[in-house]
Image 1 (cartoon, rainbow, N blue to C red):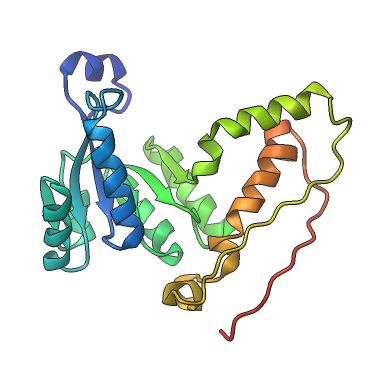
Image 2 (cartoon, one colour):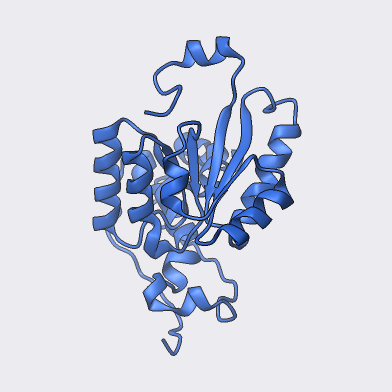
Length: 229
C-alpha cells in the first residue's frame, strides 16, 4: 500500500510530500518532469508534491533523466522502481501497448498510477486494469488533460441550461501529423490516430453529450486516413 492511501489526515499533519515517479524516459516523460518540477517550485503545490524517481530500461538513460530534472532516484528497470517503498504515485509514460501491463505491475506493488493516454490499447485491458485497482485499493486514472480544463464545466453548464435546446448530435475533430513518429505508426506499439489523436474528440463527445450527462450515445460516424502500416 502506498504510504498515505486512506490516511489523508495523517498525511496533512506529517509535513511529508507525495513522492511522484515516472515510468519511462521518453518525450512525454520529459514533459511531465518539467510540469512536476514547476509544481514543486509553486507555492500552490510545493508543500505536497515531490518529483522523486524515474525508471527506464537502462540505468544510463534513467540517470541522465534524473540528473537533468534533479530527481532523487534513477532505476534501470521498472521492477526496481515499484519495489521502492517511498514511491507513492507512478506516472506511466510508455507506449499505449504497455500501459495495462505496467499499471497492473505498479498497483500490485502498492503504487497509485496516473496512466498517460490512451489509458490502454483496448477495452479488455482497461477492464483488467480497473479490476486490479478495485482489488488493491489503488488510484488508477488517465492523464487526459481536457477532462480537467475549466471549459468542461462551462460546456456542461450551457448544455444543461437548455439554451441550445435538446442536443441530439455533436461533431468533434482534431488533427495533427503523426507520420514522423515511429511508435505512432507501429501496430506493435498500438500506434495509430485513434489512440493518440482520436481520444480527444471521443472524450469531448462523452463529456459534452454522453456519459457525463447520463446518456448513452446511439452511434458514431468516424473518418480517418490509413497509413501504410
